[in-house]
Image (cartoon, rainbow, N blue to C red; front, top):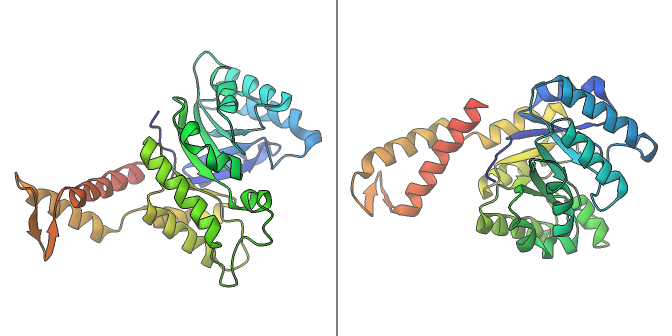
Length: 278
């Protein structure tokens, strides 16, 4: 699957149906969360609320379910697919069995985004991303840090610690190899004036992510701006591709250009077209 969501993807608690439509309107797509955002004693009522919303609207949304290896996760998958869900996020993905449990639930397999949030999940990436139902991959440095026994996620300057950047980069390499879209994780820090969000999002867009998960509508403008190619990049890419003709390598505006640069120009134009359409 090659479905691409984004670039701004906003989480919304599954037990807050009053916020569902607002979340869908505040970003390119909403994620109705039945997992971490919902307390254990509210899981069933949240599932009912999400299913009611799915039956009543035609707007595409993502649904994050509980671990499909559990009874709660299995109930989530069965209910939301019966209600018409077409895209599912699996948190803390570690095994192909988790993917199979969702992909095999409905008559039509949904697009599945797997989330790498543990050392086991990171090591299982090649196998996970080879599954035909997987339409995207993201990661979670906060859960990963906890899984690894780390005492911090960021350094004193607010940058993610090197081992977490290594995990993100590993995800990006495997996603590229599997031709699976990669999405950056949330930036949970909201009290620093947006510095961390801007840095995280700019790096994610530069390194090839196609979108970013968010936890607050106030993050949407920053995320959209970072993923939208600049007018200067779009104009230069158009000029470059118009100048190619039947040439291989050639000099263009002071730079030596060959096929990799042409591919990058095509990617920039495709991103601009897609995000403007969104």
